[in-house]
Image (cartoon, rainbow, N blue to C red; front, side):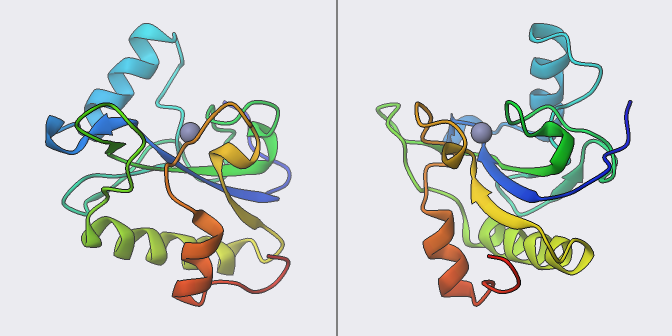
Length: 147
Ligand SMILES: [Zn+2]
């Protein structure tokens, strides 16, 4: 797989699954490889419901998570985001949000020029990750650099 030459974006995703579905990193990896014929899971990181952080692709490789921007971004996916009636729902656990903060801060340190966006920022037909990433960044004090 190709190494990225630049990292301009950190993109936050959700798995678009219900909170009670017990979806794991391995489930998402299987979907990506079996159903979409990817060589590996598309994301660089997955944060499971209990806050466990699982590494997908090596962080300096291309991902497969955001159309037209895979060559210049890191992808982080939180498991959940879908309500009981299959509506978009910010139902992520506090453990997940805490680990997201940790990962985002770490990537901002590694890639000082990278801007953090939710997936929907790049695709207006999507709502992923089903919460306002920019508002969350402000709340967490993670704005800085080019953000
Ligand atoms: Zn997404």
